Amino acid sequence: MTIKQESVSLEDAQRVIAAGQAKAAEIGSPSNVAVVDAGGNLVSHIRMDHAWVGSIDISINKAFTARAFDIATKDLAENAQPGAQFYGIQNSNHGRVMIFAGGIPLRQDGQVVGAVGVSGGTGEQDQTVAEAAAAAF
Image (cartoon, rainbow, N blue to C red):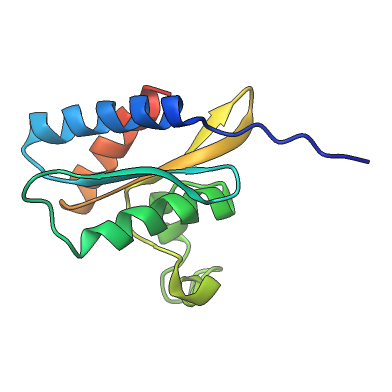
């Protein structure tokens, strides 16, 4: 039996990133915006002028996390606090799992086909940018 898996295209990723970049500029939050495919592999990334260099890796890993677990990183974070069911999950996958807001799965016909990750602002700013980016998909 063969499983068919749809995935985001470069064109999709560029559209998602453009929407995120526009929202980040609108709210004054220079950001890194990354899109991964259905396998969690990077398709495209931008680092806006004045966005933190340290947030490059974080944005990519937020996108990876959202795809790896098919959940927004904000929601995963709520369940990864001490005493919660996923406490310590950020130590899995060689430390790639991010439990900060700003990673959102991208769905097509109910199937996760990729994800977007944003880093560079506060958690609230990253989530706002990620939501705008995901809405463009």
